[in-house]
Amino acid sequence: MTPPLLLGVNIDHVATLRNVRGTLYPSPLKAAQLAEDSGADGITVHLREDRRHIRDEDVIALRQSITTHLNLEMANTPEMVAFALKVKPDYVTLVPERREELTTEGGLDVVRYQTALQPSVTALQAAGIPVSLFIESNPAQVAATASLGAKIVEFHTGRYCDQHMAGENTQAELDRLFLAAHQACALGLVVNAGHGLTCENIGPILTLPGLNELNIGHSLISDALFVGLGGAIGRMKQAMTYP
Ligand code: PXP
Image (cartoon, rainbow, N blue to C red; front, side, top):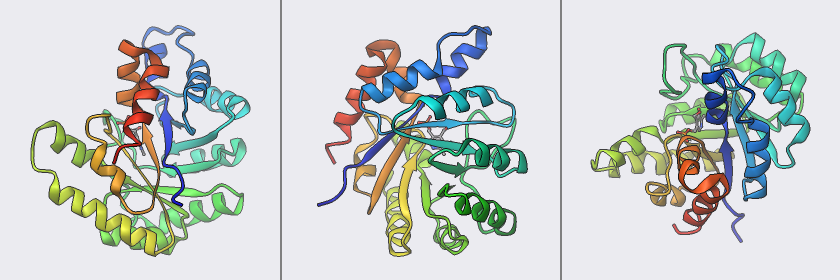
């Protein structure tokens, strides 16, 4: 029997809303608890270098309180690696980061930055924290991820989602994602995916080989304005059961 597909709920934008007014609300911690009560299988946060949404103290508080798993997204910097080794999330996702970007715009270039990534992947995994690399669906990037010894890969679904939103043909991008997931499975990597996913575009992504977890944030927090966070997560879990 295939294991159930997991939903990692990214709560960054709860913190975005809090920070924009300098208030103590809405609380990411409260959002994480509600997400878990509503069916989230994990909580994902991105601790950015500029701390524009999630802050160090949020991650520490989440680590102490959540009952599912904590996925910490971060850039590959000595500061972030030291923080992760201290806080011990259930896994770390290494992402590229540029200060001026609105969101994580592309995948990590594992081929190019292999030498810089290797010590971080080794140190985190030696401390019992599996590492996921957030990459584009490209065969060379998948091979480099496996050769670094990372346990998990997360495929960037942003291009597919943009094409879907624009009403363009998504087949070539879906084929690329499918082939990359197949390759990752064959190399023994756990396969995750995320970025830009909504209840409306998620269908074809559910058929990716070996898919373990989807990390979804922006559309869930947006839907929560209209149907509440529990309602938004319920709708997404429902959408995830219909490939
Ligand atoms: N996965 C990764 C690695 C990300 O950086 C993000 C965005 O923070 C997501 C998934 C979630 O993307 P979205 O907010 O568009 O659902």
